Image 1 (cartoon, rainbow, N blue to C red):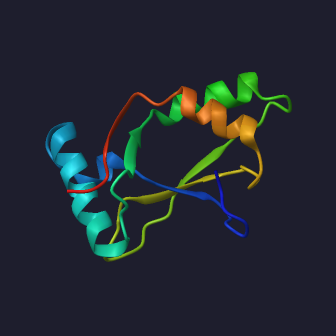
Image 2: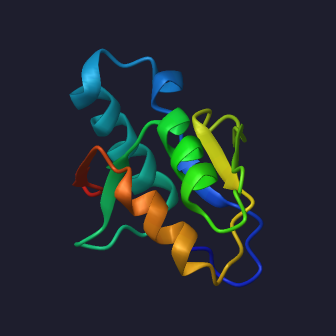
Amino acid sequence: MLREGEAYLSVNWLEVLRSPGRAGQIRDLQQLYTKKLKVGATARIAILNVGTLRSKVERESADNRLLRVLHEPEEPDDPSHAGIYEIPHDDEIIAELIAQVVLENHPARL
């Protein structure tokens, strides 16, 4: 869920990382997070498909919400940074729909 005052949910576009395979992409994200964030011991990386996410939320939200997912690179440190827009900070229904399309999850810490 968004925090008060956030315009979008921060995410990363794995394919921009150009690492071979999922394990390499996850390792790259873990290294990136270690450099720019304080990563908690229980923090997780959730993997999802953008098309599936957008379709599910549009189809199952009461207002047929169409989420926007935009590449928001933070050069030079995080070229894979992206954002999910059109999520009000207190919308638990949208948050639950997003959680339902998670394909896999991994530790965010190295």
